[in-house]
Image 1: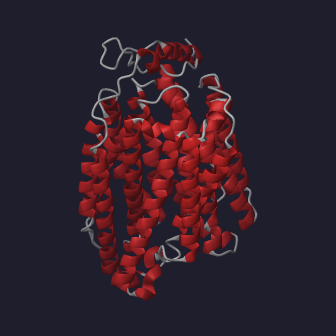
Image 2: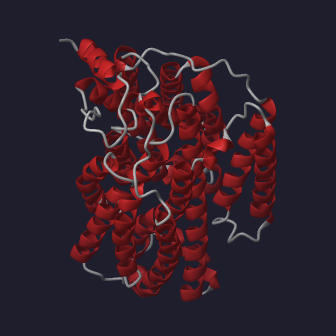
Image 3: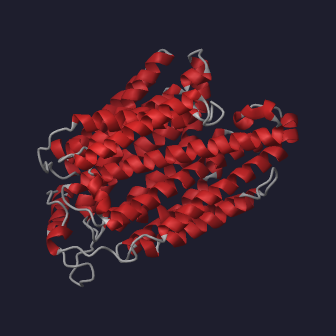
Length: 518
């Protein structure tokens, strides 16, 4: 049997009306066809997530190559993030209007084109513009991929399939610095972009062969008012948050003005969307208790965990003097731990509610970060690696079951809008967490080293003798900042107790995925 025929067979099995979740007749088999679909989606997700961390490693190199300042070249990262935020709200409407396969392949094609042009850039202006193009494609890859997986798997298998999707989300921040450091050091900065070409072309060819045929859910009109409110609102808010670190806190005009403007636009969007007959993002989804509580846990988790992700590589580089490449290697135990527990969490998510899984994972994450509050300038590498392994074990039990709990009760046409909402929530949460902990760390460093050393957060190119003098106070500052990460994680842990403790029971007509043939 060919791969396509096998995919058709797997899809046919998935499309049979499912019994109630506690029925022995429920189809929970993970077919080869479903695994092929998951593999295609993960390939695109790996490409887009790795790209962010790979490029971050090369910022200093790009500034030197194009003879420009760090604030200017930082727009290579900022422009990409803002483009992501602008386009994500559109992904649900495009998916419904034109189909998820077309959206997924179109977004990958745009991402690959942006990558190719970025690798050929000849000035700081051109590379920033091409990165924006890359972000416009990258912003739709994850929402489209999640929608495809949700529909292909159905509620009875979504936990295990989402566990597969979680691999690039957790490994990207770890493997990116390793790959980026190697490419910049031993190959060329251009290859941090060109490396996306073979991956993207492979993803496109496989998507064309494997992914389900497009079936548009309904010809919904585009709500222009919603679009003009939510996309600029998200971009302005995320920009304000991103500027908080370089501006020295949240009191600067360059932080407050875009932040307040963004929040005002988003508030106007919420007011309009709740009254609209066919909004760009269906806020009525939050009337579903499982989706609402999962979304709350996701935003709390994103704020705390992505903030902690910021601190660890900075500690390795600023306090211990390690290179970006070595910092990525030292984060590997976290990824290994996640890979061990994530498949187990996926199996459990298909059998029970996320409220029975996520709190246990967060306990492990909290315990790991509590230990990091005591980190010093000479803490044993073995102890750090063991702690990060525990961190990863907890993350594997926490992150993807939250997604699963949100999507298990969402079927049919609502799947695309739900995945869009979740991606917006995660993007905003990650931006808030990164901004808050960046400011807290800068404040702690200023307190420990004196206000004149406020910028030491990025000081990795100092002599060994100079670092020896400031490593102790810097480590103390990191420890104090990890305390705040613990507070945020504690709030997330409390929020996770509200997650449903039983898997949503769907009627037979609702349980099947959205009848998209493979």
